[in-house]
Image (cartoon, rainbow, N blue to C red; front, side, top):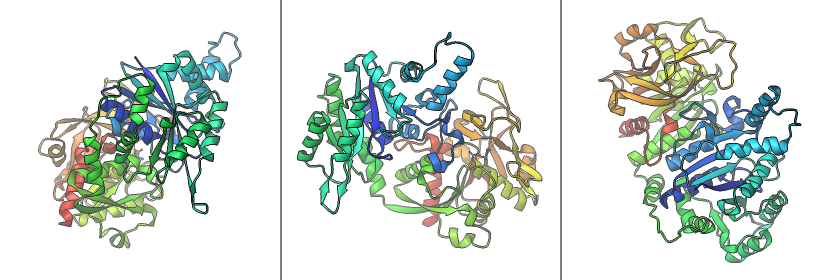
Length: 541
Ligand code: GLN
């Protein structure tokens, strides 16, 4: 039987509802339950695909080709459950669907309204496309009190009513701040947030109180009293040293037991979280250190490269080293200052990216890595730019560039206009196609050449990785490149799209057209990140 846990947030944003949901899901898995986690996002964009990373952080791409909220990355990394398109909904999607139906006359003359039409669509989403999951955790984006989230809050209130009160639980994540001048923890913001939630018809069953220090029992009792929550269900969530400690901390605070108790399930089982304690230990107390220079455009916001940060740290966990990231703004980089910025890096990485701004700085970094035997990892845009750099400086095609840029005269990287999907259909695009949702998205197979470096890393002929790109490397120079030791070592199954490139005479120089960071997990680091960090570690030794 499916049980639903709705996670809302109060007081301020960025309290880590996503991590809290993922951590709770992991605990429930340890108790032997099958879980799914879903995200309900109140904004009006259809998906975050067209939003600036500064607005929304990274766009997380699922196997089935959806561009989704970065929290789905946390869910997948913490639970190992592969996220799907059907795990993320936005107001934009809901309204798009309703307006399309309305135009087709499907409402048979009815006035189309937030209640019941919008709320019905949201309720359908919550229980849509499930198998035999025992727990479905639904995180509601935004903060209680926002205008945007009202239909979502109303929908979960109705869902609770429709579905039987014992089958769903409301968990509210709030903040209990410490006010230095009075030397006190303050419960009032939590009280107000719960008051707001209750005015919308929702009585939280569990309060997860974020705090930078221990919340004394007295204060927890007070919160429980004012918020109408059993005091045992007022749970503190003190800032953790590493995100991997969060499941352990939750268990120590009894969150799993409180949830199971609510649903009248067995609370007797003692679970063993060795998996998380081992990962935390490696992160907090490693033996060595490597420095990776990341040359990107959104270096001011770590969330813009969330999965990448995580995947690099997974590579560090595997190699027992701390991975220090040196963020380098690509616009400030050029051939004359590249040494100063990058010479102390043990590895250089150019991540996915879009647009001309900063591209020349990235190319300068790639040239530096290639010529100085510094391990180089190019992801998507980082592969395309590596090919451009090598076309210019190895093949001597001086005007080599990407047709993504305005001044392109020789497109070594060009717009993809047609490609085969896994079910052997053709996807077609033109310059005029919409921007949203029209890239080559999701999981595609690639074939790796035997005796290549990448084959020895994956130890596999066939791989499946997630893509998000509109441009492709032009294959017509592959033979010329090969003569110079630049090998396209992986291709799409039809042999048309270069998927990986590597340099023969270099300790570690690999570019991939896909995003391997999206599939890395702390307890199952991605082979490319394991190998890249190992190469960086070898460089320091
Ligand atoms: N801008 C490039 C493209 O669209 C690369 C995209 C990416 O790095 N995700 O093909």
